[in-house]
Image (cartoon, rainbow, N blue to C red):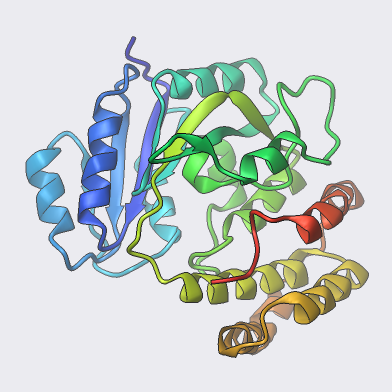
Length: 298
């Protein structure tokens, strides 16, 4: 059942064992996808281990930690119509890549499909799944699932040409909620994103992560996103809501400080989305405020 339509792209940094486990699972897939790994300057022998244990994997070693932009580097090597992202601690279920390719084949206006995420060990649904399934975004009748305002890179298959057309992930945002800006730029170009309940990705959260640093980057990137793309009123309301609700600690101060320090380039690159796209973003306001799955804690 090999399927030549999808390439899997993985970024990694100092998670050799988790990455090797992910590559083992990807090698077992019936679709037999090509896999491209960008090693973001790991110091734990990741590149050497991949070379020895997974010689069929295309390994990119930029020599520095590019964050999410490592995915852009990998997509530049992709020759298939669709690109599946996963993290070094996540992997796709058998048949899901082919299922995603089928959906993208049938719906040429669709840029991305995001799968149901099962958390391992145990296989229970990630809390974010309920929010994806009940997305308040309104889309056209032809969509094969709930319309989304953003996506999760660890569990999404994208149309390769659409990804390139939108410019890929922002070098400025680096890592942490970096999907929101790309998703909005895709929507501005006329593309749609959906949640597909029939597709599955597994996630075994790595213990090798700095949750506080990730929160700092995520909050900074959220602020940059709303200042870059939202109209003045919604941008101010979102900023004030975050200022009132995030933890009052040094990490939050650093996040706001970094966001303010970036204002010169934000103002230079600010491009407010058209009304139709802003309507999608506005529909998510209450869901974002009530979300228990995505909070700025850690």
